[in-house]
Image (cartoon, rainbow over all chains, first blue to last red; front, side):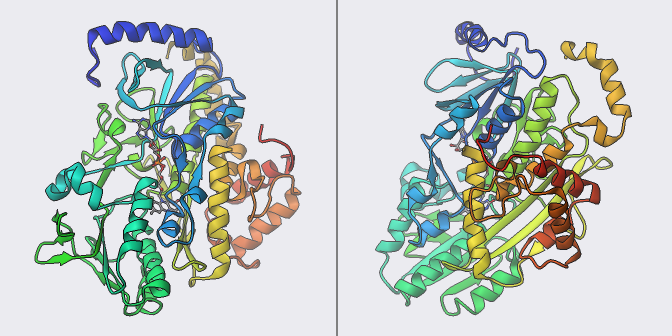
Length: 427
Length: 105
Ligand SMILES: Cc1cc2nc3c(=O)[nH]c(=O)nc-3n(C[C@H](O)[C@H](O)[C@H](O)COP(=O)(O)OP(=O)(O)OC[C@H]3O[C@@H](n4cnc5c(N)ncnc54)[C@H](O)[C@@H]3O)c2cc1C
């Protein structure tokens, strides 16, 4: 019996037919050496990368099906430049066609349930997919239940997050364009951990850059639930106080308690802040399919994984990547890191499907470039190596660091990073 | 799990060997950590150094010079410090053996 899903009995009998059909199609009923069928859920930084690398590293021996609900990938990295009017949505949108040459089957659909005992996932449009191993990289979902005033579709139409790139990015850009000069844009940041630690501060800078050049009387108000700037603190503080003096106002320890959506008002513990454009980045947790499939979670929010395989610590044959996991010490939730998780998992899965143990010395690294204006960028980098004593990947002492100052050379590298990581995932 | 059982002897052998020998793909896996920026298998998609097909000595000399600070960098001095000598050697060897042109597969 499955404790993981709400599949009905009848659904399962139909599902079983789907399973054997699938198995026949792929000829993988009994997985042999380097064989089998891997289903990947989510075609973002983690999912697209793991699909490509499993196919590539198994020389097509392992069949891969990637299920993604959206028609194309839209990148969060560089999306703050779209908000500022420096890039278009088309610049950060890439199709999944490039994965076909690896033999990956891309299915545009949503996975609505996982049956870990029967090793089957259910698709929203109907039908089931059987797997030998399942990889979940669904990103985050928002904890709207913590903000009653924003817990309705109507409120969420006006008060945007734009923390998943796509229609929300375009809609927030429109709100910024429609805002009269002299208006206030307020951005609320949840307590860490959240997706992309430096992302909100980059956004504050890029909106301030837009105001400075196009609407110089306007203000950016940053309401941060954290005690201080979470990432690249020294660098962002300097940029806020110098380059955007009089434009950006930064308020730490300003946790959002609720939202008055009609009046575009952020409700804090002791204060209410009315804005012309209110941009709320709500608290986050593992994406629904990872959070609600019976996998062991940490703090009820993030999936606990084994760092040798990215496998769930509770549920066999399910691996989880990217923002959805409980991270190792000092590890950020970034696209770069999700891509690295994917390669760790791909290497482990290819070995496991061939009956070999996973590597006992995995290593991952991170680089996050943040734009402070259209040209100048600052980075943060780190390297994390597996430590058998703690069974975690731990930051390598003495490695990593941040830029000395915002600079144009890293502005070029920031864009080249995006181009290369998109290619590493999708072509 | 049953299908792994016949391999148990092989596994035991592999596991008893040195870490490097236990995973024949260590070089490939380490080199893949560079691909986010430098392209899959070091075939840069543009704007970053191509690593594929570069001579091993040259790659290793660059990496060690980044690490010592002899070669100026925006970020590589910080990243290269996260890898051991053996790891840098494996990475340089892997990229040197890749053909620079041609499809990714
Ligand atoms: C403004 C902003 C700027 C950022 N800048 C950077 C940056 O410069 N560098 C960096 O490294 N990171 C950056 N990030 C962070 C980065 O976007 C995330 O860390 C990354 O997307 C995580 O990858 P993922 O695979 O976990 O999730 P995602 O990339 O979000 O992919 C998840 C995918 O799964 C799909 N999905 C979810 N559930 C299902 C389901 N049930 N069925 C089918 N499909 C499903 C979703 O549609 C989505 O496509 C930024 C984020 C933001 C918001």
